Image (cartoon, rainbow, N blue to C red; front, top):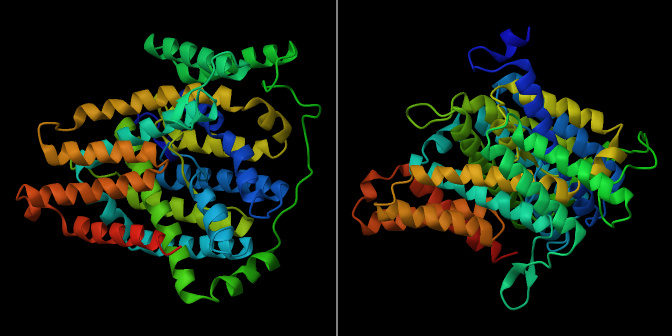
Length: 443
């Protein structure tokens, strides 16, 4: 049954490898179970309800992606877009969290429509291969930076904006230990090196916690809980009335959600596709429409359940790097998200930033290898690639990096007299990107 559903032999993989890959991806993504409730809690939502919605929506969306698209890509409420939900739409623009959920739902419906019609696939396939490689490498740098920041290795600095933390903090030392171990395992080509690195880091962290060190992974006092509530449908429905009170404001909110999710998803799928053979000879994603449809279904389901936009996670690359090649990987991750509902105390206690940081950093290193495919002799690709990578890191946004990279590409192609070689879709996107940045000045 599994062979018929996931074509394991064709993808040159097996059940054991796919399950390990799914477990690896889950561990790399598990932080969202703790972080998302905190961020949406700042918008006034109940953290227990958000945890429940996060776990269920991630489980549903990941399994849909696995069965429908046969992609080793898992989904969950996205980082960045949840910050947009809380700190921009609710706290800055003054909408209720119910209205923000309604906006997520509407954006998901729009995504469903443009995915079914093939518009989304057409846009992604219009991206030049050189920019796709830059996007993939940029995401690698981005998630490595996220890992270093979340682990406390990189900290804020008033003089230089960012700086190196004091290296005598126990959690920082644990993360550094994990990075060293994981780098060594991957360098020696140990099967499931990233997964094993995280396990070793978690075990060492538990031991350190038992020795009295603070902020280490610890075993919880209770292992199973059922203390969860869900967002009521009445509260969700009320959000539509709040959302459409101001048509222009509503348009800005919907456009922002659409923009961020569209290009975060595009960048993630392209990056992962390059790593696991999902890009054909023409530089196009294989079965892209199925993957995009699955992503859109996840967004709609997440909004109804009570969480911000569900999107494809770049951390899925951690599973790909240990051998994940089919939808069985994402289905395994989805099942673990469902199970995490019952064992949430364990998940929230063990999956600390220090434990997940090594996976993010090492996967970032592996993804950065895509820079080697860029034609650095052609300045238009050099400029676009450089701006894409550095903007993702410095603005802490995959979408901003893609947008400014595209605009830079267009300008460089005009300057070199190659404007006619640029797809009309790219020019349209450049106009959309410029409008997007302008719209941010209106918020």
